[in-house]
Image 1 (tube, helix red, strand yellow):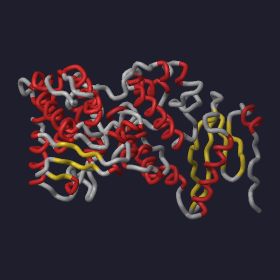
Image 2 (cartoon, one colour):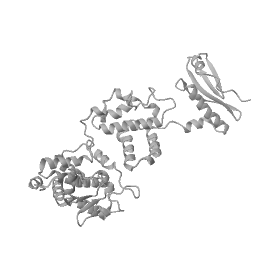
Image 3 (cartoon, helix red, strand yellow):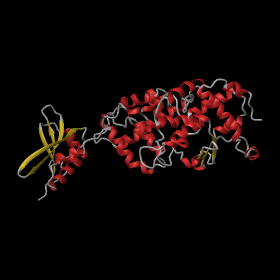
Image 4 (cartoon, rainbow, N blue to C red):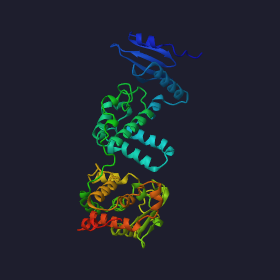
Length: 402
């Protein structure tokens, strides 16, 4: 005859105070010590030997949770397995392991590789070093704040996204006993909102921080000394003023080095229109050197076969160079500030170098030409500024787009 299950209820468990043990049936017992503390254990017979395994303290482990654990133990015994091995196999993982598992399960639903790269970089040691070796049940609100506080006011957009990502990873790996404090330590509502300023109140934060254009020449000298492929990619980005994805996903058939032109297909452009980039001497020098060493059609091939460099390599490069306050995208703003302060070039030429469309529909129809020659003059002057060539600003001050 099968032993009865679920003999106890929550009221009986709370009221129990007599030293000894109470059976819930099926091998599950509530143990009460002489001090009055309570804990759960599972007892079973196997090969004539009686064994016992602790399932955790009460009330951290509730009656329903203890029953769930005991059910797993009974299934293991029925298969001839040791219940202890069952719990050893399901030992709580570290935050770093939880992140890896989350990425593997969710990356197929993301539309591009940049999304995964951003998740991996922000949840890794670059921002979450303090969480990597901790288990979800050990992570507290203070731990999450230690990650977010240093960047909440200076990198608000990154910080708010990071908070949401931590929350999702922890939700997917909720400890059986719950979190310390009861709620997800990365939750915003009723939790972090009480100690962090609302992102909307930090409107003066620049999400794409730009290096002052007067500092760019010195930075370019440092960049030129670095032998990495990511350094060449960042150089090309600065000389051409293109976006990160446009540069890193560039393929050799897009370039005409004889005509000194790079035609970026519309699929990679934000405005979904082809963009013709005049190539300056420094850009040509970079490309010719890379062409001599080419491995495939990617200009900046990654470690994985048939894949370009990750979209995060340029941000990581800036971080390694001690320039993490700036972003690759911010160099477009550096150029625009320089063009506005140091030249008399027409606005539409400067905006054209950035692949921005300005004016009403009539103006757009009138200016169907891409003004390659005018943009080439401006980009040559920008290259002179970046390389510290003397007289570049004086020469350009005489140039207009009329």
